[in-house]
Amino acid sequence: MPRLEYLRLQQCSRSLTRSLSEIRLSHLTELHLRDFDLPSSAILFAWINQLPSLKFLVCDKMDCTPDAFCFLDTPFGNQQSSNLVSIKIQNCSITEDHLEKILFEVLPKFPTVARISFRNNNIRSFRPIVERLDRTKTNNNKLVALRYFDLLGNPIARSCKRDSREREALCLFLRAFSSIEVFNELSDLHRDIDCELLLNCAGRRLVEGRGKRQQ
Image (cartoon, rainbow, N blue to C red; front, side):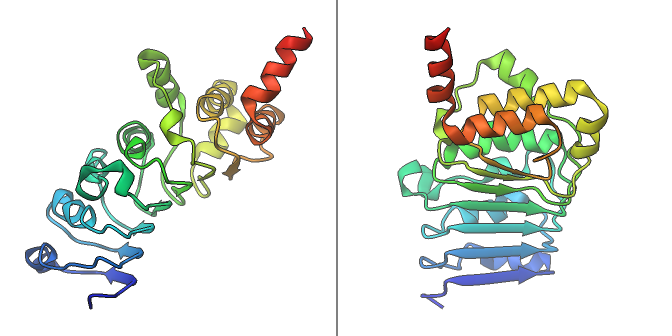
């Protein structure tokens, strides 16, 4: 299968781990993993890291620790060799702890990622992420390609409706990650959130710069 471009692995047994390192798929562009049973996520991601043409990665119904996705890296550790543009992690019981790890420790390795989806998980709050931003003064310039952020099916929408602190945290998040223009599930939730998204779409630096000059 040297020229295989699409691969779906579903309900695979642990015995597959013995052969993963031997599979070379240099032309694979799309990989779907569903109900995947591995004793160590490091083994899985070490193999994924050797797929130089990978553009679309989907992880569905996988039981992962917050650190699991930190093993994901660019091919041979070289950011310029990455072609990944879309990551979907859905139905994996992802929490804000996972999200924090992915945003700060995984995504900066992939400056080409434009779409990320966390559908049907258990993300309830953005406050830990905003606290980390404030604590570390993290620079998000490496994520300039990130446009689409999907949280459909997470409890965060209810949290934002009920708690003004959550809405404020989400607004601060969107200011920090100013390349995000589409925010599924949370669009039209509150005018403040819509305003932050509109500013991102218009070009935050340009719009806010004009406002300061007019003052």
